[in-house]
Image 1 (tube, rainbow, N blue to C red):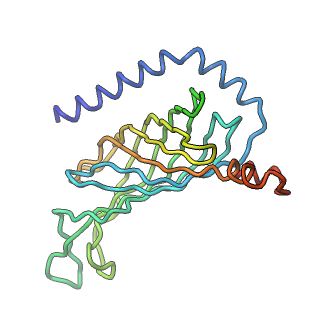
Image 2: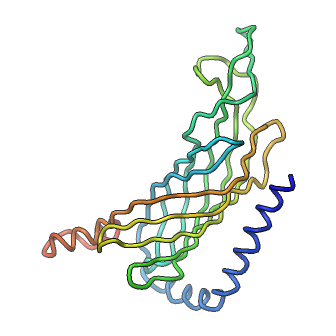
Image 3: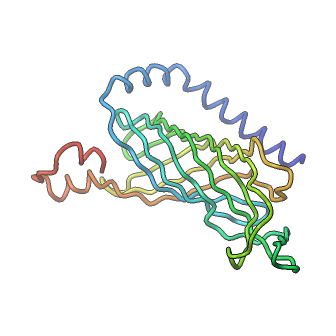
Length: 227
């Protein structure tokens, strides 16, 4: 419990310092960005963290709109990809023996991301999302066993800092570091969900790549904005 409190406190102080430093610049930039024409935005991601003492990957898809390539927000769907064995055991009406279980997590999210620094090949942003979903213990080896337990409510808050670097005009690498905070988790879920988040990214900027190799292309601008 003490270690958990220290992690939360350190990240809280860090994000408060970043926000205070960029507050005035942020408000001015947001006003200018929101005046620009919105474009469709999408993102596929895989975020790594720990659940209990095991490494776990959460996959997600995000759909929304962006303004001036600086401000993005929308909705997302996320689920725990890793199959993590649990110490929990399950029983079904048709099976007298306990069944080995694993934890399942699925949640919808509201996300926002703001790029507060872009210069030369570097880009720094603050992605944040709130997640609302459920957790459930399911059979580890088979989903054919009838389960008595019901899904339990889960509320998450995930603030991060993102750093991207363009190796060339249309290829980049990056990383995200942050924290997954379980604001609400049912007591019957034994695993520790609050944990640091880390992401390593390889990015292809499709629109820039098309413009670089095929400068005379006839692709409509709305489609290029999506790419």
